[in-house]
Image (cartoon, rainbow, N blue to C red; front, side, top):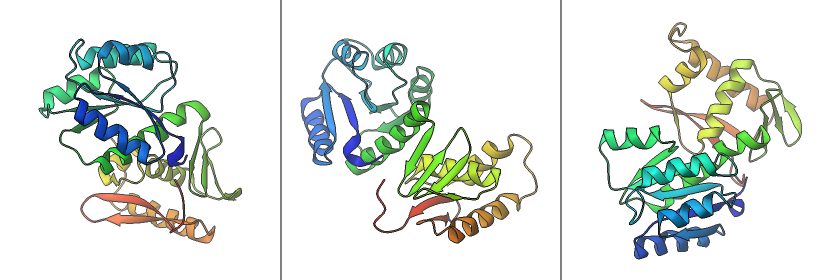
Length: 233
């Protein structure tokens, strides 16, 4: 997936904010449609196939939570919804996620972070369509649990594939150690050095295959995938 491929629906009734977001996205060569009301948002999102919906909670006609639920129920595919709101209480976030929101960004926000979150959500949504994830020279084939680097197979262990999939899906963000442990082993993780050992093996396998990507340790947090210079998402 590259930046020029994204189609975004911006649902925002504040004209200045809407214009800033749309102009920024179009500056990235993305296609951005705008809806200033919940009714129009539902109409567009259930008719068109968007990569991501940016949804303000405070709309003039329909509550954003209701709009989110309607979009999730009626969209032609499982479109990721990123909620944009000034409501930052835990209860508000919990209600949003219960209605189907995939991510949450509190106003005011950095437009660059907004773009990164859109890319991550779009990759996540793409998994449900093609069962294949493309990130730079790497291709992850989910059905076969295979990794290709510019078409050549990269031999990974089953655990290495699972780790790489989480890192690719979250890219360019980091994945916490606790999230990796829970995804790999659930409530019964092995000893404390197991994840570190699997990360070491994954790094070596990527390096031996000449893959232009590496696993970087983020102190006190977890791990992040880093692409070599010149690699395009």
